[in-house]
Length: 403
Ligand code: HEM
Image (cartoon, rainbow, N blue to C red; front, top):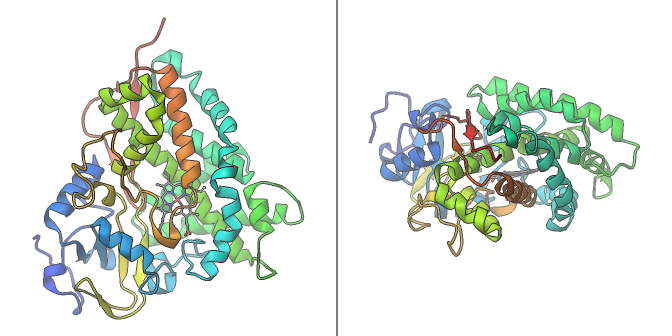
């Protein structure tokens, strides 16, 4: 185990201390989904305490993460138990616990349920074609800038009823929140989103629009209207999730396909394998790092938690946990089930998962039709920028131009 000179609180047993910074570990600079699990599953305790960033626990194994996310009595998402997440407005529904959490989900569920999301398929397909058709004859692209930062982001702005050009101001704010190691910068990003949303909600208040923000603005809990803070909090999390996670996850998935031409060939030849491919690519390409706070002093799996201890869940680790998945780093589209927690578990499980999956599926259906073979412009490690959400830093693709 590595040596640590930083201060460790007295309740932490020395054998559970392990030096790791989830914003600054060297393994985060390239191929993190292979290198971080190799290090942490190889040498860290299943739950360890790192003194970095003011000190926090990290959970490395899927079985523990599954149990922890379901035990909201002990492990809460409320900022009251985790000062590292004490933002204004709070991000809702993630930073709420049941029963209020159920009420927020009740407002959002009809929008994100499988049925209503399926109805967007035609619009998603048209948008994908609109974006990739001008690029394909060229034989190369900057996937991040020309596709990933445009397709899911425009789709999401359409769902919330915001102008598409707003992406130029919103994407940098999302990136500041998800990649900055500095709390004040993250808090400022949330406040900036809050201010952007406030004017959006005000404009929709007495309208009967069908977009996401109008529907949130009409939301009721026990007959009362949502407060301005609740409205903004719901909007902030949706903005963050809609603008950054799909972009990042889709980019890792495409990078993996570029590196494994035999796997890509399987979905080109048989597009019915695309849904299984999406799950498998999500399994090895998790991006999110949500947190919890301990609600009291208790022992859990031999670990002494104290009230307000911060807990970071590296959801990237669980789909490649060798105690949960056989040969976890092997990508195979014929697994019976691709076990992963890329969308979390428990009451806070991702509400946008049906949308994200559909976007992935439709993108791959259209891309495979038009680009039967492609690769990365430069082979080698995939450079990444990692923080609360992990993302490739650049992803330049090339393919033979068909005459
Ligand atoms: C591939 C893309 C995505 C990934 C990997 C992802 C990942 C996650 C994860 C891991 C959680 C659980 C957080 C926790 O346990 O605290 C979560 C929650 C959430 N996600 Fe996603 N997400 C994605 C796309 C989306 C999209 C497109 C939306 C909405 C437009 C969305 C909205 C949300 C919301 C609102 C929550 C909070 C749910 C709650 O607290 O009840 N996500 N997401």
